[in-house]
Image (cartoon, rainbow, N blue to C red; front, side, top):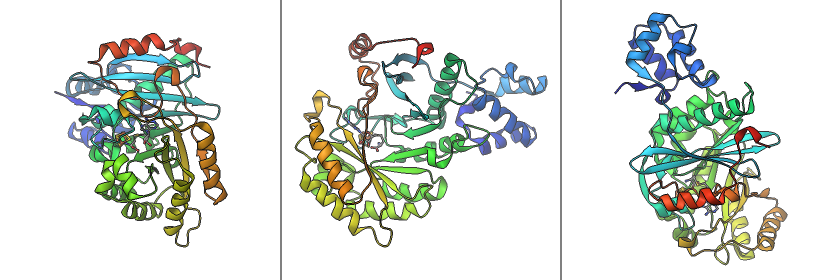
Length: 374
Ligand code: SAH
Ligand code: SF4
């Protein structure tokens, strides 16, 4: 097996080129061809000497993931299902907005954390994605979108690691992928426009603050340990007090001066005014001298039958948001996007073995050509 260059960040590619007896700057040229121009065929790389191209063809390749399906929602959201082998698939979602284009990227096939309200969690854990499989999602999406939109400008301006999987439980593959996303010769994202979302893997939050301090979102979902233990099983290992302290430590290195807390609104479970009050107390207890140090993003729960849970009524979500806002905590309610193609948070299940489900979803989706993206 030769090396897939999507697995390498620029430092890795430089070392690779040096092993081939090539100068360092060749690695930069190659990296730009791959990530900025979407090239996978070495013969396209016209400013590389023919002899080098031949050597590369022999020693390495640029291979993305096979696409199982591609759906475009009526609101312009695009969802791809990528085959990662052995009957597993991962999903990637592009969310266009007027001022940005956000790609939601998966880090694992399945997830071992097993949150009660998450369809990926219910599916169990299959395996970690490699760096190349994480980057392939961005590589494919960026260049497919550019081609179909007829532009050579950057389409994806923000990346959120909020697809399937717990990114901080796949740390060694995650960090080189983040580096490629941040690299000026790669995707050139700023650290503020790259967000890692975690259910709270405390030791890895500390490592991330040193290795690649990007924006951090923490999936909170409950204001006390008793409730959180039942929703996010990882809480038993890293309870709220430890998690809050880790968030505060992260802030010393973060590109933004706040942590985003995600909070999935579950009918009758965590959505009462008393829960909002408890959250305010929790945030204040850890504020220290910082004052406002976090924001809340309330996510309307996307139900799926096996969860046995329901979405909070809209009025309750608004009331919950108002209580937090009145206490001086910046709170937003997330819009659900791509509902008609099951692209919303927590609906990413990606089991290609389940042909009926995929077929069912395809029938429900309004599939329109990418060229007609709003
Ligand atoms: N494992 C990471 C990142 C992937 S999940 C994490 O948990 O943060 C991304 C977000 O989607 C998390 O905030 C998660 O809590 C939320 N989510 C999961 N299932 C959901 C569902 N059914 N409805 C709404 N949000 C959900
Ligand atoms: Fe895993 Fe995140 Fe889903 Fe929890 S919410 S099961 S951590 S993907």
